[in-house]
Amino acid sequence: MRRGTDHPLTDATVDLMDQIAAAAREYGRPDSADLLVDEVRVTRFAGSVVVVVGEQKRGKSSLINALLDRPGLLPVDADVATDTRIVVGYAPEDVATVISTDDPQGRQIPLDELTRYAALGTDGTPAHPNVERVEVGIPAPLLADGLILIDTPGIGALVTGHTTVTLATLPRADALLFVVNGATELTRSELAFLGEATRRTRAVVFVLTRTDTFPHWPEVLERNRHLLREHAPGFADAPWFAVSARLRHLAQQEAAVDPQGAAQLLADSGTEVLIAELRLRVLLRGRHARLVGLAETAAAVLADLESDQRQRLRSLSADADLLAALSARQAELATLTAPEAPWRSKLAERFTDLLAELRTDADARIATLLGSAQAALRDGGREALTSVPADLVEGSRGLVLELENLINVHAPVIAVQLAGELGLDGLTARRVDLRAPAGARGLAPDLIVDQAAPTGTRLPQLPWLPVDWTTRAGPQLGTIAARTAAGYRQLGPAGRNVALAVGIGAFVALVAGAAAMFGRLAHQQSRDRLRAQVEQTLRQLAGELPQVLASTVDDLHRELVTQVEQRLDGVRAEVDSEVRRVLTDRADSESRLGPQRDEVRHRLSRLQTLGEDLSALRHRLDGQG
Image (cartoon, rainbow, N blue to C red; front, side, top):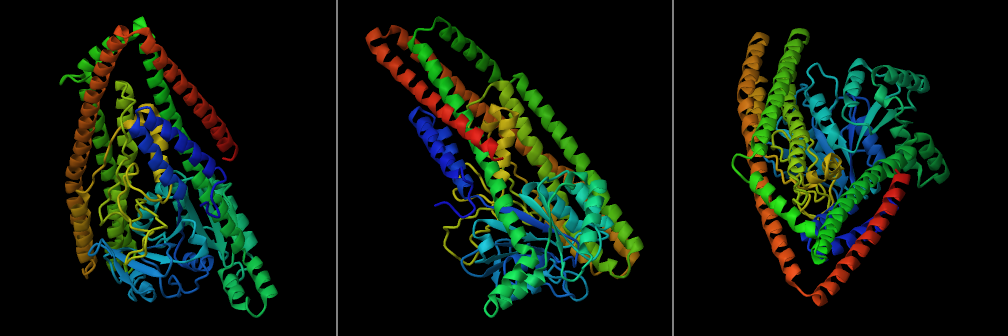
């Protein structure tokens, strides 16, 4: 059933994918058929992740409460600041789950205890430092189509742990919703964040809140536009929405007694226009991107099927050159499977380069963590004794997320390059497995949203589990699956087919240990002693991290070698079988070969028709992009 904000071409795309998958299964490519079926399942039900960002007290939580028509949902008191990520998705009834390093599987809590786990304590330090996030599910109409809102801790602290995690998350989300208010123009820290964010996402929506409180907000808005052109030109043309959460709440209260007045308040609040943007632009834009990616995958599948059938037709037609070509391929494969094959040393060199890049990046990020901590201890007040250790916990998590991003960008490129060089277009793909550790996952995008799943003790829409997109059923939150598949396709057909898993489970103990050490530092009473302990802890992290990275890269290298060896053996068997079939065809009678040729020509005609239908669909998708 189509949902209210589904893409208008979803049904047509899914129908054509089913036809192509049926052809692939019928023509001996069940792996390609399974890939299409699984990608259709992911694409049809996918939602979108919107990360809500802003400095403390800019109105992020109030805005989310207003958009969801739940005034008391997220903590908004003047003396309360959000200290952890709060992930809000759809659930048939209210549910909240705390995810912590002590309980990574999650523990359900009453919704009215959300502030207790998600906010800073009265002394300005985390009341529950082991809490990584809180997942909240409510039956809000805005969330019913799969939209996920993530309320983040305020950016702009002297030590930028929260900011680091948030920045590392942006490439994994569908959109950034950046919140300011009408009191003052964008601050220096906000502009610095946005300047960095332009390198990580192009999908941003700006919201200027509290328009009912600050009558001069139009001047502030114009000044903000000017500042963006100067400091973050990539966002200069991004849309702005001026809203008032208070007016929307008043409209709710007045709806029963004064419907006309409530309607005017709702219009004046500006929130309905923003909701339309989230529904019709963010959700639909994400679904459009996934449909485009799905069509690209289908085109590659059709190309493989057509190649198979054309080769079969050559065999049935006694093509004199076919046997020679197959013999040459046999010789080539014998060379490729040899222990001294050049691809092995070339692959090792590429992974060595990747490891060097990871180490350089890690060293730079640790140096940044140290410099920020030292500056905060030098320039900050007494509160730095508690804020610095807490922020370093987030900083270490952000460090791992950034390294994870690097691995998952560069390792698939290595696989794509190798597959293209070896001509292994027929390999079966598994997506890169972003299996982040519990202590460092933060805002990992590995989400399944299954709206048909039964309600349990855990919010069913947000299980935060690793995903193998080619095998796991259920809708996929965000666009990471489509982006990964699109990345393979853009780099070449062979890239679709390389099985590659990024296992960084070794980070679990490392980051959890660092977090524990930083947590203990919060009890230090001496600024000099804390400074020394911070330096010692970061040196220890710098000493251990290269070993973890080396182990991770080695695992990637070995797995890719194994995948290539297995696939080369499979291709050799296929070519040997094809040689035998060509020889059999040559000895067969014309009375038997003629009907087989007719059947292959029929198949090619069917594939050509499917290809024409797919081209027309892609043209329609281009017109709606």
